[in-house]
Image 1 (tube, rainbow over the protein chains, first blue to last red):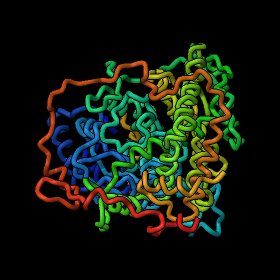
Image 2: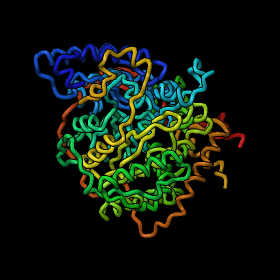
Image 3: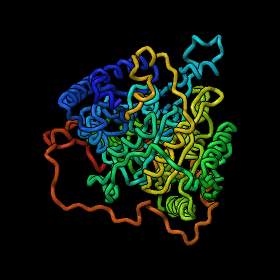
Image 4: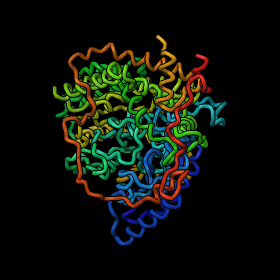
Length: 516
Length: 108
């Protein structure tokens, strides 16, 4: 579509308007918390002026994007899907948002998520759950919805996965060309797998977290969601690099790259970690994983089984470290400087307590309390420090495997395809997160880059993705392999009625569905 | 092994967040049970890991003022303010003791 903009086949304002009206007609997905219609149109107009002068800022100029609602966006409400921040208008842009705007991207709005990014379904935010666009696809309806219920849209819809579900749904339903998510335990890759889009988790330290409301400072990264791997590379190129405002970004020079079109995987060594054959892994996904391994074998790559023995402890480890960091990070929400403030006025402490009581949901409160428990003097050594030691063991597992000559790891992203909402809510948030994060969490523990590539449709007509994990800061190699794989599997396009109605060729055409 | 009432109370005071109901307390119990699995791992001789970037030096910039003068913007988001001050209710007043508070812990 970027080429289309350059050639004048479509203008930024047209593109923006089409996306905005598509957002309106897909409102039932509940993917967006805030739609910044006025500012988006203004940005689109500015972009149009630049194109007319023949001076676009780059590939992203005029491209509609969406941002997860836990990134600060100047002048636009940032809520983290929580009562604690309802009405909070950010006074500044997160670095990644600023970078996108500086490239001329058009910010359509903020997307829905689990409250404070805690969750794996995008169901626990105060604005309600996000619906997976595939629930309304012809592919799902044909396979899963019995004829007699075909009028009742409401009972069979499936979750998006989380916590960046809104962003994934927005990209999947064509309302934007790229979206930002965040990834702490799999929050970008999980919904990417369920919504059939590319979800990239960059190496920790590559992209600035300044302005991303933190969950776990040592594991959070901004995530990138797009419809194809090339697009993810483009967005990565505009976001990566040292930020003086985030001292956890590395100082090495980052060179944006373009992925080759002819890719030869025969010199690669692909590792298949046996522990990722986790209990509960659906036989469909297991077989897709195996077929994928064969694809690489047949192309001449060396495919070997490897072992990451501490994988099964990554969830427990995450549970302790995450709640400990959350207890610390959520301490800033006291009602004094921003956000919700209770009317209770007896004392500072009671005002703080009441504010937090009113502002946080059960999940957040639960994590704060367990975090504080693990950080108590009598528990610090046994839980927090212990978890940090286990973290090193997990990270070392990866180091050993990569040192032995393996270039990329191939694993499933999720245990199954998306489940219906009515099923999903039968288990509580912590149980769900424990189950759903098992395949994605370890990469966050070790800070490694990982990407979900949509692979095939399940028997129920829903997307299933596979995950590639790479070496630190080797995003180019990771994305190259992902692109090769993407070309091989030819994942089908979602067939959504709403998109068809709004499209006059811009969205449906395969080439223009993506940036490049 | 249930968590002592005194510890639960202490947590509510530290976190300034309440358990709300019996379910909240149950949640903590389950969280601790789950975390206990960590003890299955042998970590003798292993150093705790704070950050995956531990082999690198953190970036420290020059101690020069590069931004600021945004008082108005920052005050916009506060509900109670007077001139350029954030206003808080009186401090140094401890939260009521367990016996005096209305909390689910009373019944435990």
